[in-house]
Each structure stands twice: as structure tokens, then as C-alpha cells.
Length: 401
Image 1 (tube, rainbow, N blue to C red):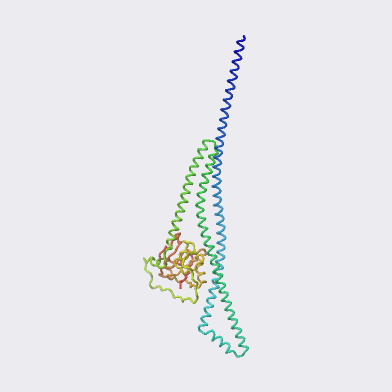
Image 2: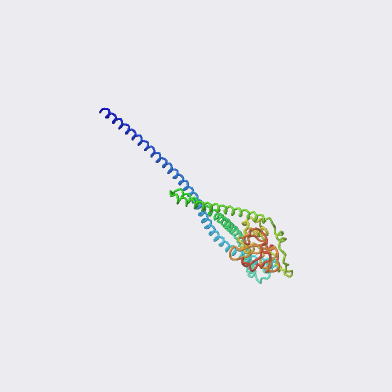
């Protein structure tokens, strides 16, 4: 009996011990699985955070570009309004200067013909009384005083128009630079938006747990990556074209008016019967300008005209403003084309300028120009054409002498 009881006690002890061991093993296995799952969750969380970081970074770049575009657009609108205001003021000053020039030249010719000093003395000598002599002297003094005031006003207006032309040119040049930056930003924005789409899909793929949905997201991500690569390649090609075009434009500036005249197409014979009406030589002094075109944006029509006609002004504004600015500076302007003259078209907007290289008649000429039809290099782009029927507006010529 004692043996049976002892055996039972031993068996119970063994069973209890085995159960405890099995329970311990099972607990350790579960803890390891939980720890492994925690590690997996932690790893996925880190991947999601990295993907979110990438999304935030690219989104910030997109927002920066969009903000810059809005700022540049606002600046351009402000500058264009300022340029339009300056253009009106320059036109008004030019009219006043040209009118005074005509009046002063008329007085100068009269003085040369009649003799100013002799006329002044005769006016006094021929007076019938001292009172009349005093009145005539007073009248002559008023005329001299008025002439002096006219000269002072002429000087002030010439200073004012010069200052406004510089300010106008700066505004125009900034607008053109901003427009180029907007075009560059548009290309960069397309690339960044494509990259953002990739990053957003990558983040969505990291967050999803359903294998089927994840596979679909990964397919979309691959397609978005292909689009991003295409956008990046398009941007690189755009920048390469810009660089190549700029090099061609700059190279085309290494020319001269005589070289352009020699290169003028003469496939059609000129009308030998056409003789431009001779114009009188100017009786006034004109300012001397720099011989380079650096004051105008490279590739613009104004840059091309200044390159071929270094005698043109440094700050004459847009093409539409050149005739007005030239007249104020003392240059002859008219409607008759002449070789060497600058043709200025005014369409109510920016206008256009070119240098005349051949003349067959008033309705048949050839010119060398830049920024015509999107081609920013200097050259003869049109052959023979009628300057009075173009889309650029009505034409006025500025003569070099």
C-alpha cells in the first residue's frame, strides 16, 4: 500500500514539472513572436516616416516654385503698368522737345539771315521816342527771357526723358528676364509634380497591408516613376535647347551692318527707278551712345537693331517706343525707307525694330533683325516684303544722319 502511494506521488510530481516546462516554453515562443512583430511594425513605421519625409520635401519644393511663379507674375504686371506709364510720359516729353527744337531752329535761322545784333540795334534806333525805345527794349528783354526759359525747360525735359528712358528700359529688361524664369520654372514644376506623385504612391504602398492593393499601388508607382523620368528628360532637353539657342544668338551678334548688307538676298532685281526723297541734314546736335548692345536683352529685336546700328540709343525702350525716343534725341524720322535706317513698327504693344539692308520701293524692302518668328538670332528672315502690311503695325524709319 505504501509503495502505491509513493509511486502516485512521484508520478504527480513528474507531470507537474513537465506542465510547468511546457508552459514556460510556450510563453517564451509567444514573447519572441510579439517582439518580432514589434520589430516589423517599427521597421514599417520608419519606412513610412521616410516616405512621408520625401513627400513633404518635394511638396515644399513644389510650393516654393509655385510661390515664386506667383511673385514673378505679380512683379511683371506691376512693371508692365509702370512701363506703360513711362511710355506715355516719354511720348509727351518727346513731342515737347521736338516742338521746341523746331522753334529754336527757326529762331536760329532768322538770326543768321537778319543778324540778331543789327536787328536789336535797329529796333532801338528806329524808335520815335525815348518812351518807345524803352518799351521796345523791354519787349526785346521779355523775348530773350522767354527764350532763356525755353532753353532751360528744354534742358530739363531732356534730362527727364533720359531718366525715364533708363527706368523704362530697366523695367522692360526685368519683365523679359522674369518671363524666361517663369518658363524655366514651369519646366521644373512639371518634373517636381511628377516626382511628388511617385513619392505619394510610395507612401501609400508603405502604409497598405492588403497584398492585392499593395501590388496595384506598386504598379501605379512604377508608371509614375516612368512619367517622372520622362519629365526629367524633357526638362533636361529643354535646358539643353535653351543653352544651344542662347549660344547661337550670341554668336549671331558677331556681325555688322555691312556684313548683313553683303548677305542680303538679291535674287529679285531692285527697282532702279526708285529714288528715296532726300532729307535735309539735321541742324541740331545728337547725343553719343555706347557702341555695344548690352543695355538690351540678348536675342530681343532691340538688341539686334542696336548691334547692327550702334548709333541708336542705349535706352530707347521697346521697339514701339524707338521712333519717339529717337525724335526726342534729335534724329530724323519719316516714312521713306532707306538702307541703313532703322524700321520701327508700332502695333500698340511691344512693337518691333529692324535695320534696312535693301530697298526696291517704299513697299518692298529687306531687313536684318532678331526675334522674328521666334528666331532670336540676327539675320535676314523675310527676304523682300512690304513693310506697310505686316502684323507689327505701322512703320516709321529712323535715319542715321
